[in-house]
View (cartoon, rainbow, N blue to C red):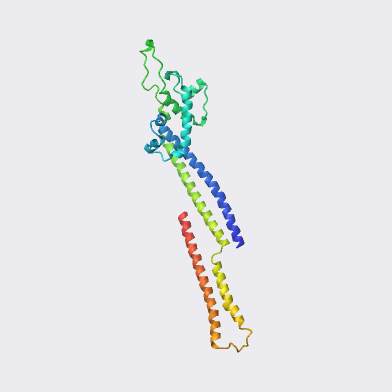
Length: 283
């Protein structure tokens, strides 16, 4: 029993290590998907988020492609708010015609640095939106005949274009990997739980008290009571009633023993069938 207990404890350590590794992988995969979902949500609804004509809850409600909650998107929306404030400060005081359409070119010319460099793509999108809200330079009467095309200062469409087939396929693969890791975490958790139950069963063996009761009964009727008859002469209890009593008591202890064994074997088989069905349902 001691060796089996050590084997179970070793198996539990292995499961805990595997579970810890899979949980880290799952959290990382979930975070990657959350980053992509949040970026897509912000890009798809950037104009509403900047104008604040709708609340975030209203935007989420009307976004058919978003499945993230406000709590999940909150850190990303806070980053967006920071980026909006930075870009507004960068371009304040300029006329629309005075700054280039390309944000990176604007950074080079102005020498301004962004605080969230990994989010440079989002800076560009915000820049193109806010650039449209800048005032136009007053028209010089001598230049009145010069006109600009209507879309000269519109947002670049490539920044807000939908993902191509390759990106969609890559996203699906990431979701598939995330779901697979989640299933593995669930299976490992259940395996660890079952091993813990088995270990607890070793600490509290099933049927222990029942077996102890049967042993106690057998000791009384098979040993203790017959022993009380030894001091008497051999012909003192040499009657049929006493003989039948002793035989009945002996048979009763055998019956108690076999009933106990039958019940315990049935319980063990029932538990084994349950575990087999349980593992099949998990796998």
